Image (tube, rainbow, N blue to C red; front, side, top):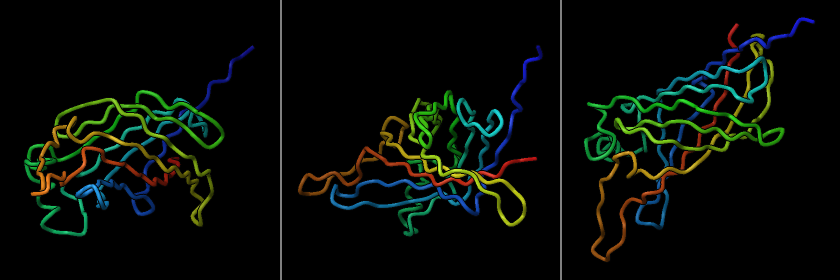
Length: 182
């Protein structure tokens, strides 16, 4: 009996229908949201099944935007991301595990500023659909929390009242639409 082998399917991030955001507490009382405007990535799956898929992602640090030019410049500086010496952040998965029909756990290595640490993200699967051009699309919303100081983003300041200016916890929220490659 011949054994069927699943075909590897490559999916590419569709940047025009995706967003990569981070949220961090400012003064511990409000949240600042930022995003990366330039990013790319691929997912390799067995057919259309994302269990055990391999994820590869990168974002250009110079594309960071929080809606405030001075803050964006500070984030790109050596105090934070050090874009001049570390122009990209990267993520490479080590596992993608199906939890239920529409939830996965994605574990992998995140590299920021030359520091690589394992992280785990929750991935909510939105399903698949064909678009007007005959392409197959798949959607995921990924979320998780990292500690910025573990990645060398250690700039700190304290207010006169003793309050923290920037939280160590950074929420990651990625809404990703993938396009199946032929």
